[in-house]
Image (cartoon, rainbow, N blue to C red; front, side, top):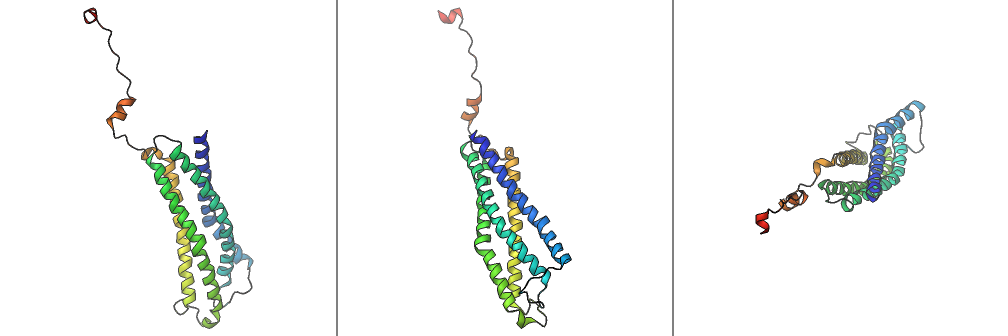
Length: 211
C-alpha cells in the first residue's frame, strides 16, 4: 500500500508541474499576448513612448499568473518528494534511478527557490526602474543608451531560460521514472546470484553408502 501511494504521489506531482509549465508557456503566454493586442488593453503608468503598451500589459498579467503558479509548484514538489522517498525506502534494493530522481529534484527545488526568492524580485524592481527613467530616453529608447532597459531585458531572458530549464528537468524526471529498468542497480556479487538459484537436489544414498 505504501509503495503504491508514494508512486501515485510522484506521478501526480510531476504531471501537475510539467503540464502546468507547458500550459503557461505554450498556451497562456501567447493567448494573453493576442488578447491584449486585439482588445487594445491599456494600463495606467506605462510610459508610452518610449515603451510599448502591449508587452508591458502582457508582462503584468503573466507575472501575476506566475506568482499564483508558485503555490502549485511548491505542492507539486512536495508530492514528488513523497514519491521519491517511497522509491528510496519502500523498494529493495534501491535502484540508481531513485538517486538520480532525488538529485534532479534538488536541482528543480533550487531553480524554484532562485526564481521566486531572487530573480523574480529583481525583474519587478528593474521594471519599475525602467519606467522611472523612461522620460530621459524618449528620443529612441534604445537599450544601448538605456541601461535600465538593457538590464531588464537581460533579467527577463534569464527568467525565460530558467522556465525552460525547469521544463527540461521535469521531462528528464519523467523519462527516468518511466524507464526505470534501464537504471537498475547491477548485481556485482556472485553470492547474490547464488542466493537466487534453487538449491541442487541431492541423490538418495545407495545401500553401499549406508553400510
